[in-house]
Length: 283
Image 1 (tube, rainbow, N blue to C red):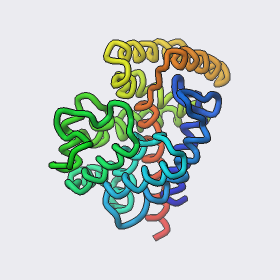
Image 2 (cartoon, rainbow, N blue to C red):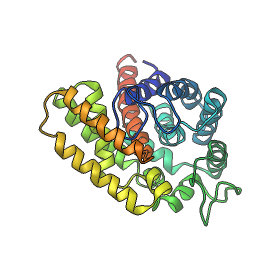
Image 3 (cartoon, one colour):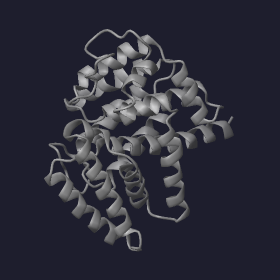
Image 4 (cartoon, rainbow, N blue to C red):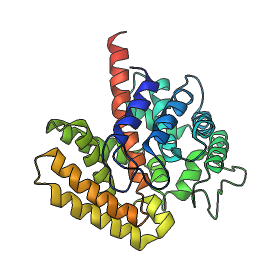
């Protein structure tokens, strides 16, 4: 499997699970269909995983390719998270992926920030990038890491940059491994991974659009849902409950997009480790 294929597989796996409030193959939502995200994954995969370019170039090229393909913002958060992972896999192939990501983050430059700001402006997500300092509408004055540091208190994707992608390589990887040990089918593994993030902290996408109280309420509802299905043994019963919760969130316009982005990033990191292991094994 190539790194580009690993990215596409992570995106497709995420779409194959009935993630409450988010778009998936079982239900559209928020004016988008699952096919929009499949098309976006295929468009972004090659620019995101091209050897020999910097992180900012990966972000900008992936968003430009996505926009040319689907004409809307479907994957900005995914690209912002997956670009450092892809870069680490390519630049430090014999280093542990988590350590490689930390090296990548430490090496981010103002040029990376310039290109990331252009990508964010192109995607034009509501509320993202509007800040008292390091606004994406203005020229970058600091490295991408420093810009993310300024936003990390209000945005969980920015928080990953400052904290070495701790949610991806810690909370997310642990949840994925636990589900794998329990021999759960792929869609259920992805659903549990998504719920792990949604239950752990207020979703940044909901926070930006609806405020702290609604984001906190959604997190509490996710915790209650996870507890209610914990004793269920049949995946189809869990999926039926998930779709009911899905309908409730979508009826209120609530889309936990950051939790979905972190889900893709965790899956991509997991696939990337397999790609690196096979490459190393094969010399």
